[in-house]
Image (cartoon, rainbow, N blue to C red; front, side):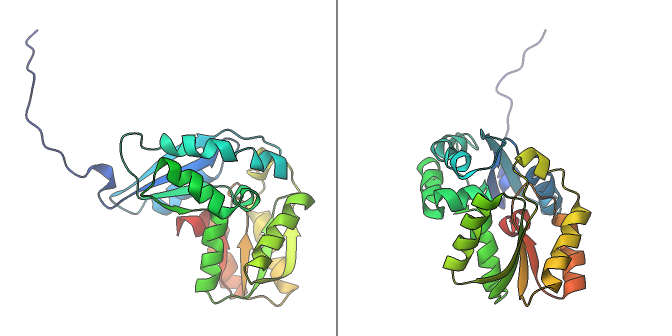
Length: 231
């Protein structure tokens, strides 16, 4: 065998020449990675890195809060040797339960220079961009979590005239709710109320493919946790 070492090479900017994006995914979330691949696939020079955070399949305020101590370690392993441009923590209800600022602090403990976002941060930023004040909300959550979500949105200065829920307590089941059912429920909610926009909460809900049909039918902006956070 002839061994040739120290061959010449040069370094370029790698896959993330434009941007590097880190996504912390719940272990029980079987949707967000698929939807983000759809959204980011057409964009060149943007690298997407995933880290999974251990969590309980049953979604309750207590199981959501239990993720807080694990966030920093999950952010550390996204790109262990280098900085990252943006980190997204992929849980709407946990962000509300833990607190947005507390989530950001845990992310920045691992990646101090990274910009940070969450689904609820992004969704409410989108609503402000739409100049929406009255929002129809759809979630898969049970009552205890729904109350936290509604209260958080209203504390940010929005009105929630109508709030619908599938009342499904297991995150793994949420990922199996048919997009056609999501579409039909959002139509029903909006047609029953006077709203400026609609928000589909939860990164496990499959909603990307129904957002444009909903906007075309309803004539108002519609976004979801995954859709808003990617934006």
